[in-house]
Length: 227
Image 1 (tube, rainbow, N blue to C red):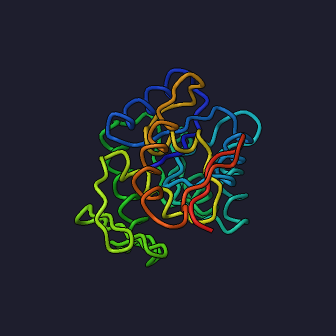
Image 2 (tube, rainbow, N blue to C red; image 1 turned 45 degrees about the vertical axis):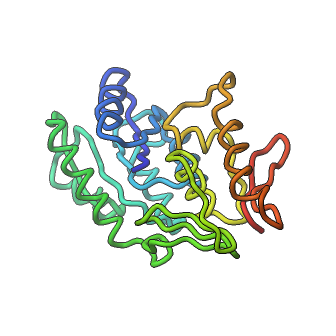
């Protein structure tokens, strides 16, 4: 899952983020509520973990703003405010779960997994489908088989994941940073050429042997798949 974590404690935040990353999640850590809100409104997350006691815009205000904008991403409050009134306030603001500090990481992990399963169950049919199709290109997520114009295409693991990411977002701009975070679980690194290298390899397999390019570059912006 991709998780937004709002936690201003400079020791606790990195510790939580590190533990979740070890379990295979991608975690974006924020110490500022306003920055977290901007990120949550502009990017896709599978789960929000919000501290209620951060300077400026706190977790409660962040979630209220998101729910007002019809953002339904599951949210877990992780806070020292454990009174009944505080819990009720959190749920009324649109929270899906509430865990008080101090806490055991094992319990946090279990709650994250439970919310992830709940989010999967609420996914749209488009997200739940096992085959992605765009024109004459198809990607079977179960058999890991890729075909274009009836011809099977052999993809390496990262190429498959990269193509899946693009095919779920036809016509949308995908930036290099998005690909590093979502496909490679890396922070922005201006020195790495891993994205460009894999894009080139993917194009040589899904575009060059066929009529009509599906993967295009927008110079200085990123990449667009399809229309």
